[in-house]
Image (cartoon, rainbow, N blue to C red; front, top):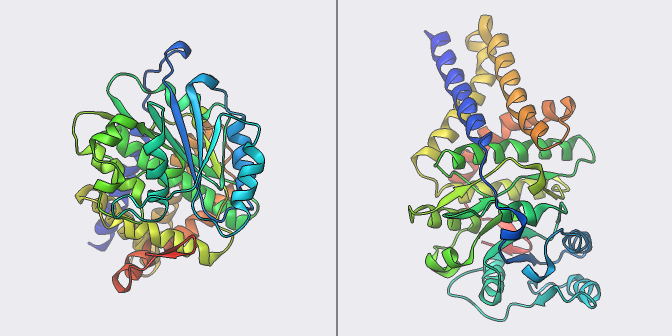
Length: 363
């Protein structure tokens, strides 16, 4: 009887991977170069003196008609040299504009308020956002914007992470895994999550939902905006697996930063609907099963755990291949071990406290 229960749980997890793979592999029509819309790229930076210059360099290298693009860099009241670095870099580059948010928009806080200030003055039809600790591929803006065919209101893209060692390589695999789940679900019409460092949307649709000021505060403001647009039930939201739209971010430098990142995402995930909780519950039960199987069903444990590892590997490998990235086995194995404890402990942590610390602010 126990073996049957374990087989059912692991089978449900495997079925989910198949569904997400199907969604993530969907292709979408694209505009030709003469049809590209005007765009506003927005980066909100707070105390990013170590990263902001690399971000600015990558934005300056974007392949996009200059007359159709503006780059809005928001210095969100940094207390380090971020503002000075921005000023020096953009001094002779008119496509850039620096903004210091002076306006409190509704009850919006932190990064969302910084972005909302920039959107108010943005001239582009399409808003693209990334983070100050990211570098974008030269084709990023062009690739994302090309997906804005009729009735498409939001386009999201993949973000990988720089890999310096096993700890950071594990984070890269984690990112791609979670974003493939997000891509697969979104492309099948059921958005579960989005990430603001590679996100875009039509400005008029953003205004239609009332902007960030009309959305209840969340530590994951990008997810709230995604769901507000989805709830309109009149536009397409897509998440293509396209290497041309890739963004690369810096990983968390230590376990403390990683903890707060995951907790912030977990708190934001509490706003999920039934589908989101179903996916999370299946993952939780599967990883609990990996820990309990050697004790409760020892004869089948090796097969169940091995099956789960192989399923995850090929789920990820196909996406890495499409994104023209490498999936080192050592990074994958580190991710699998980390993923067990992360999936099992995060829900428990959220029971006791929902406080989040991020970029020197508490929420």
